[in-house]
Image 1 (cartoon, rainbow, N blue to C red):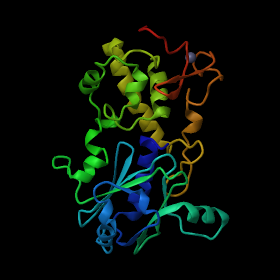
Image 2: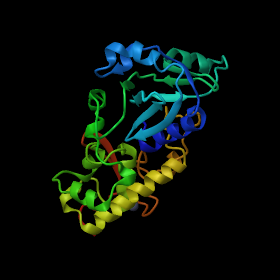
Image 3: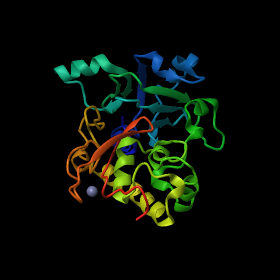
Amino acid sequence: MPELPEVENIAIGLRQRAVGECAEEVEVRRPGMVKGPNRGRWRRLLAGVAGSEITRVTRRAKRLILTCDTGMTLLFQLGMTGKFLLEPDQGGSADEMRRKHTQLVIHLEGGPDVQFIDTRRFGRLWLLDCLDPDDPDPAMEAAGMSRLGPEALQMRVAVFRRVLQADRPIKSLLLDQGRIAGLGNIYADESLFAAGIHPMRRCRGLTDDEALRLLREIKAVLRRAIRAGGTTFSDFRNAYGDMGRFRRRLKVYGRQGQPCHVCGCPVEKTVLAGRGTHFCPQCQTPAPK
Ligand SMILES: [Zn+2]
């Protein structure tokens, strides 16, 4: 599932090629992906997008947001396998797969088509008349935007310490988008390893030093992953169709049974909050060091 660094990389590609271009047409091939209170009038709303300029591509948590000069906003949740591709259709077998799973196409006047491709079909689209956090419209509420916590990369330590006043395992808190937005399973595990904190530790039991170290490592891991183009296990591609290069830099995620890069102890995997959780039993101790 694409997390913050993957969605950020898709946004970077779309910004380069789609911002400033006019959308000729937005073609929805799977109307079921449109959600929220504007679902019933999506044809009319998207017809209004034709001829308008794409002015901004942004990201909030793991959602991707395209804004037009009319104020109309397309808010995408990529789900398990959703991706945007800019490449032109070459007619090869990969293109045939792509055609089969393309759920939406933004035809640009002066650039390549932007295709939203989603094999598992968990991707969602909300149509918003405006995107104003101070005056959220019902579609924004429906998209869960008002329930998101602060962005992980912008989170201040005082806010993080407040969020940590909870009696639950730190790993489950890091996955809670209402508390800290953008982290998923991969980067939660990697951040906890980098900070030397066991995923089962209770949030409230973390020392001030540990909280500071963890927040620093969360931001550092996310920034490194963004620079490496994200992590690809199977599906993720950026807007140009490239795989992310962060996978080979993962320290614990997906490395169960392999030696820890720091101490040589085999990396372990357990299930926590319903998710596979990877950690080094020696570097990440269950109590403060
Ligand atoms: Zn270790």
